[in-house]
Image (cartoon, rainbow, N blue to C red; front, side):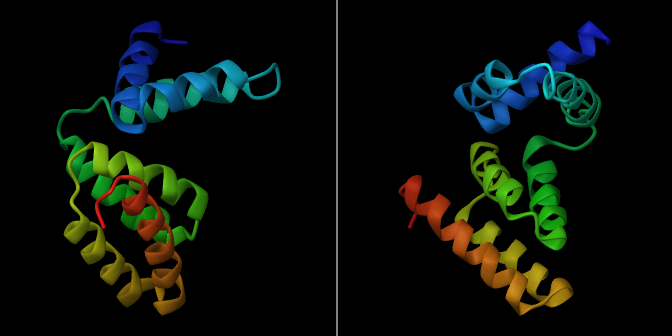
Length: 126
């Protein structure tokens, strides 16, 4: 493990997903899931999100599009919260969902709207 990359990833992960969420996931990791949590923090967040070429807001918008296209709604909800933390607006989330509808289908966009509404309500943005 690259400790420097892990620490950078931990910082990026907490900034996007929230300190409480990340610390909860790490503290609940056991012998079975801890290696994945460590690798994901180092690789996805340290290497991927640690690359400053793309700003966090744009990266969040890209993630919502890709995760929405994959139909991974649990992750979409987590990253919807993270996108808001990174400055993505309600109108931008709506536009992302419109693109998902065009390229992935209306049923998938309806799932995204359902989750976005839940998250936006939690954040008092609706």
